[in-house]
Length: 619
Image (tube, rainbow, N blue to C red; front, side, top):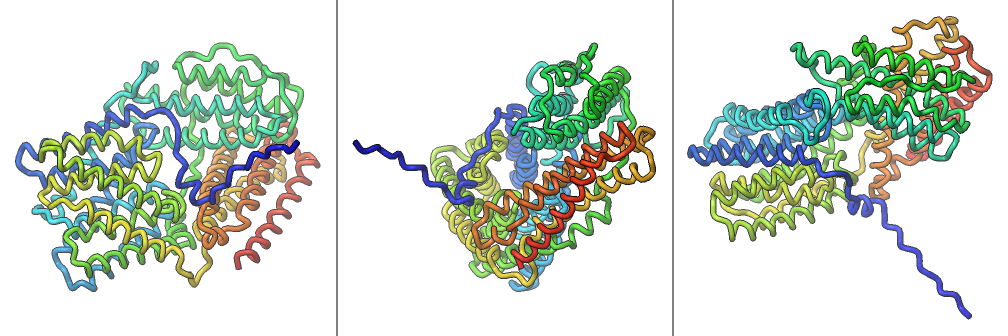
């Protein structure tokens, strides 16, 4: 009797698997509400007063700000939304005056290429800089090509007004739910509470195969909380106490995370009650209530003693509600410039310059009424933040076709301009949900932009939008696979270099405490500096991991340039974990155990070998 064999499912190539992947999670209803109240109402007011062109520019500013409107703290959103909006306003001014000046069909692509080189290089600095560079270039193309009666400086003001209106909604409207305490800090409290929950989960996973994943989840929670509480401090008395309390609770979680990481590194299972005190702290943060008495873990080894001390420190911080901020370890102007002119910034800058300049030249040669769509589309396609190159090109093409067909049907059925204004409002509400997949986001944005074009008095251009998008896809694919005179994979290598630098800075600080005999005599300021270095090490490692995962999902011709990076990142993570365990033992005994010293030496040697192998592989 023959046995039936069930065929195994065929594994999709990484680039196609990424294109089909959809982010999951609850619907951000507060962001949906802001999106509905942003672009649509602004456009409606402008149409009513007889100045639709003003509404088009303001709605464009609100739309681009809505794409960047992600979960997080309200004050952090000011920087995340405001900085790109300022870049977009500058791009509108540049484009308006360059477009009016003309200078010949050859000069505009050259100017666009230079602007793309600068914006692309600085986009490598970080997510906010990337969003700012994108808005700068997109707005420059729109300012040069869209026929609007207002001068450039007025367009910039109305663009900023649209983005500022969404920022105002972000600051004023309460989040859904019945959170206790000041509603303005609901997101911050939720992010900090998630840190304590991640610490408790890591303690529960100690000694199991799930510990590495739980440690990565703790890093992600700390990154999100750090971003949520970033931004300008409130100076008014009604908000200062709540704000200081949240900062104190976040800082109190840092030694808890350090102790939990050291215990997970040891690889020994812990009693179930070990994380009970941390879970009570998480509930206290989330509900805005006192933490009450906390159960103390057994103080049988250095890690558990560090956890007990961290719980006492947290209970004191919760009672006082204030804390001294840690020493700053973020990037200064010199670091920003070094990143922009580094290999990652140079490679991305040249790629953006070629795509932006070539697409502008091709569009000028086609003499199309909406020629500015071609370079604006190329800017979005060239962004690595949106996924691997082949994946985002496929999603952009499919999303544009779907959006253009949908808009053609809506334009034929709905009355103008009232129906188009309603479409803009609905699309603004859908953007926060559509950002979970690039194709869905493209479809929604396509419908919104085509509606704005018609309200502004230009003819419908659904089919032209499809053609120019496909042309932009071809240009970006070609430029993305061109041979480069420098080493490829600059973005990954730049992130790995930053992670190595941060990891070694953290290790040097811990080892210097051993050499100086600090140990148990280390002061609070010294430990705060160590916790800040540890945060920077894990954060840069997480950024390197994200860049490596993105590069691995590229087509083989591009993915091979980042071969070996995964092993380097894994070794760096083990090095930082071991350094954390060393720090806890040095605090407890004032000396470095032999086991830890040997482990550090082995990891440093392994890291050196992997770096040499990686260089040989991609040479």
